[in-house]
Each structure stands twice: as structure tokens, then as C-alpha cells.
Length: 510
Image 1 (cartoon, rainbow, N blue to C red):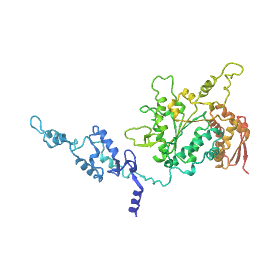
Image 2 (tube, helix red, strand yellow; image 1 turned 180 degrees about the vertical axis):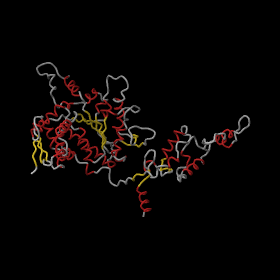
Image 3 (cartoon, helix red, strand yellow; image 1 turned 90 degrees about the vertical axis):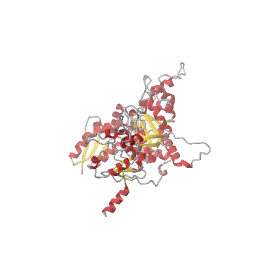
Image 4 (cartoon, one colour; image 1 turned 120 degrees about the vertical axis):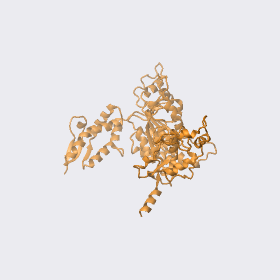
């Protein structure tokens, strides 16, 4: 029974390379080493190249198709000794070449001191692996479970809802931003409808549907990231959220451009096919704007925009697996980005001033002329943004051309903030009420308290994030004191408590 169970476990699992940690399904067949260790051919070749004077030893000569030396170290060395020899080296080892005085060259080689390694036939200086050390302490074989073969489609067509139903789902989680939710619902529906149709599309007329990436512009705390997270959850597709501020041009300190796709691949559990239909949200995209005052090479600004062009448009990109940059020992895989939806978002501070300046150019003198301060108090000034404004802000035209859909979001008003606190499925107040329910305590907020709370949040000018931080402050003492007293049944948060003029009302149980 034990042997049958071990055999079944081996069938359900695959060996892992000791050096690069790739499984057999990705790295190919493994070389069995002493101590139940396995090394893939690529890692062994790279190691030999690094210690063997630039690739003097070629693993292709070992006849790896049959793996004749899988039995252990002795067979491996024997397989290496059977390699074809270089002509001059063969003459040295056999003593057929002599010095000027007639003495064979091999005698000079035999005068090595006792204890030194004698030269191996057909081998460069290959002392990088100590097989005796590998045998100690490694009794268990490194294995991972085999991934089951996919039987269904990559995307469930039933989850790709039409735009009006997708917006209804977003309304359950996101308050306000009606125009933005409508535009995003249409863009996402068209994108995944195009993927599902796939080969069924008739391209005989020369019409090919291109993907439409999005650019989201809005102040901090207005819900840009939350909308994208909700979309990915509704569609059940991989989502990668990355920060543009950490990206630099390849070769400089920081994350390479391909690290964006590395995070998406990790979110898809290293499934390339599933990653190729995912969503990538690049936040803080305004931080890579071109610096006009910088005369040198802008490695974290304009160069990053240029590096993102091929990703946004759609191309095959080599991506490091499990790392943010490429190097010799990191495995690479190829991802095609033509079906990946890229959404870029940023607060774009001072963009309002650029828009106002452009719109004021149309003002003139006279009775019917527009006043220059006409747009100073316009809260929806971002709705008038144009590509020229973004270009003056610092985004290059090629980058803007690959983000055809521009969506603007507005600041949250006091009424919207109150709704954010109460109405969404994952509302902040509902989270704290559920926490106190675990202690059998009911939590209530008066309406005046909620208005006072939103006024405090507006002063911080950080949107919905301000609501969370303020609630954390006011709930700290309550969450600390409640577990002390089992008689507390209800806690009511009042306006005076929010304004630091009183304490919350406490009602006892029973």
C-alpha cells in the first residue's frame, strides 16, 4: 500500500529544479543529482558557461535526449568522459607532442602535487558542484503539484455583462462618478466581447477591431483604483495594480517596464494564457510626465512612456518569472499583450490650471466677452480636458495615442461621502458594525454625526481616504474599551463625539 501511494503521489507531482525552481512542465526534463535533487539543463549549461571559460563545454554534446547518466554522479562523469576531444588536447594527454629536448609534454602534466585535482578528460575547470555536499542534508525531493489541464474557456461569457448591467453592478460598490462608470462599462464590454468572439470575427473585409485602453483622471480618493478592483472581481480576470513611480528605463536602478507584466503573471498563478486576458492598472501615471527643465536623459519619465508604448499597443514581450528585472538566472516567458486591457490613472495636479489657461485664450474685451475668472470656481473643469492639455502636462503624443478613452472623475461632495459611508456593499460603517457584532455589540451613527465626519474629511482634501482615517481615530477608544465590559449592548456615535465635545452614548444589554 505504501508503494502504491508513493507511486500515485509521484504521478500527481513534478520535479522542481534546485537552482531556478522551475517545474518540469516549464523547464523540461531534469538531471537527477545525488540526494534526490534535480537540475534542469538550462541551469547546468549556464553554470558550466560561467565557470568554463565562456562556454567551452557544450551540454548539447552529452546526448541529453536519452539522458544516459541519470543514475548518479558516476554515470554523469562517465558520460562527460565520452565527449569528443579537441585534437591538440588529445595529443597532450596521450603524450604524442614533445618539447624541444624530446621529452613528452604529458610528463609535465604528471608532476602535479599530490592532493591537487588532475585534469579531467574533455572537461574545463568544472569544480562548481561538490556532489558530496549535495548529498548531505537533502533527503526529500523538491516537487510541486501538476496543474490540471484547462477544460473550460479562459473567460466565462456569462460574466461579461452588457454595459447597462455592468454599471448596475458598479453602482452597488461605487457611489457617484456616473459618467466614468458608464464610459468604463462600455470600454470593458467591447474589449472582452472582442476577445470572446476571437476567430469567429470575419476579417475578410480588412476590418480588425483594435483594443481601447483607458486613461482615468481624477483627484486622489475619488475611486479610481476601487472601480478597477471592482471590475476585475466582477469579470473574474487577473488584475495587476502597479505604481508608475517605481518604473525606470531598463538598465537603471528600479523596476523594469516588464515588471508590470510580471505582477500580472503572478496574479494569474503563472498561467500565461490567463494572464494574456487580464487587466493592468498603472497608477500615478502623471508622475512619469516629461520634465521640461531636465536636459539630461529622463530615465523615470519620458523614457518610461516610450517603454510602455509596445505594451499598450500589443506585442510579444519577454517577462521575468518571479522577479522585477531580467538576469541570467531568472527564467523568462513570453506574453502577448494584444488582449490585455491597460488602464492608467493619475491625479494630474495643476492640470486644471492648464485647462483654464487654454479656455481663457478665447476671452476678449467688450460687453459680451467672457470674464477671465469665469472658470475659477468650476468644479467640473476636468470634463473639458483635451489631448493638448495632457501633452502640455508632459505626456508624449505617442503615449496619448495609445490611450484613446479618457475618463474624468470628480471630487466627492458631502452628500456623496455620506453615501460612501453607508450605502455600498462594502461600506466602511458596515465593516465596523460587523467587527462589533463579533463582540455582540451594536454600532449606530446619528445622521448629524455623519455630516460632521464628512466635513472633517473635506478639510483634509484626500477624498474617501480621509473618511477611513477619521473613523479609525474616533473608533480607537471604543474598540479598546468594549472588550472590557460585557454589559455593553449598543454604542451610538453622536455629533458631539465627532467634534470632541462629548462621549458616545452607551446602552446596556437587557
